[in-house]
Amino acid sequence: MKDSFYSYFENKHRGSRESIKERLNIYMPFINPLKDIYLGETILDLGSGRGEWLEMMQSIGFDGIGIDHNEEILSYCRNLGLNVKTSDVISFLESMADESVAIVSSFHLVEHIGFYNVKRLVEESFRILKPGGLLIIETPNPENIIVSTNNFYLDPTHISPIPSALLSFLVEHEGFERNKILRLQEDKSLSYKEDIQIIDILGGVSPDYSVIAQKQGELATLILLDAAFDANSKYGVGLQELSNQYDQKINKLLTIRDKRLSNLDDAIERLNLLVQKENTELKANLSDVYASTLWKLNVPISYISRWVKLCIKSLSKIDFYNCLLGVKTDINRKLIFFAKKLISILNSKPKLKGMMLKVINKIGFYGYFKKILDKLNRQGEKYNSQKIFSCSASQLSPKARAIYNALKKKIK
Image (tube, rainbow, N blue to C red):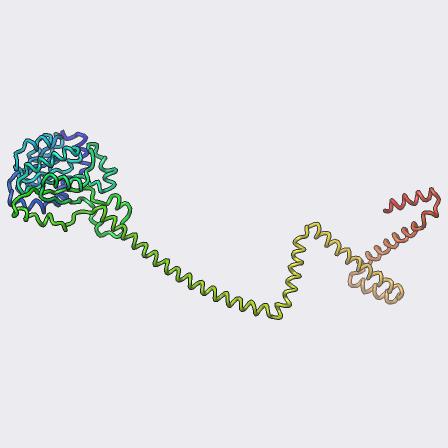
């Protein structure tokens, strides 16, 4: 059967067989030197899964044995003719003879079995490895923040992530001669990427890592792997490295910002000097204007103009209308007075009066003057009526006095 949940899960999230084999090539610098010494010897793959590593080891001459407890997944291996057994890995290790295998490998197994069993796995592996033999343990890298907080728990069979420093210490503690941490499966462009983003810090660190440990053996055997275990050889991208790259980017941006701010400060300083110069020139020009004769004449006129505008602005519409009405009345009064004088003169000189009337009639002002004359006549009648009643009330009889007072009141 190949239709179980976990086999489908592996196929979807583990990657294709070809991609897995491509990833596993990173271990060949450690494997190839042992090939000439232990060619044909047994290698043991714990949690062999679909058998990619077994297939690779068999192709270069090792006799591989795969151990897994999942029958559905092991059916892939059996279909490929690989030697696999269904068993608990710790139990199978305990059944193996001392120094009976050249390589023990465990790819993405230890995160499933708990730390106590991881410790037992390392102990038993050390016991069954030949001198100079290798232990390879690959697991998710909790140094990658997205892996340790999210992606790790995508697999429901995962128990807990294991930090690389802990696994490295464990193999050292159990007696291995030397070990090396390999960070794996990161984006290769991160090593030279300048524009590091926050997401790179959170998820750009190598999502997987492995610890490769070598058991003590003959010096000649150890020398064969010196290059692979070289402390200067670098594998993958760590959180500290990415953080340093991000810090460098931020410092570079801050340097650019500070330079721009400095340039801006210089520009502002030049602008201030220019403004001060312009202000000095304007003050000098204003002094010349204030000292000029035209300004001295203009000051009182401007003052009066502002005062008149203020007065007009402060008047209400009714006050303004009354003001205009008063001006009109005053003009009419002046015209009537002038007309009286003119008529008085014309009445004393009939010939001049006749000529004046002809001129007035010709220019079309006769009607206007006629209205003025009529108004003067009405004023004269009013004056006469007032004169009639201007006699002393004391000279009238009581009845006449009463009529007089009533008429006077009515007139008012």
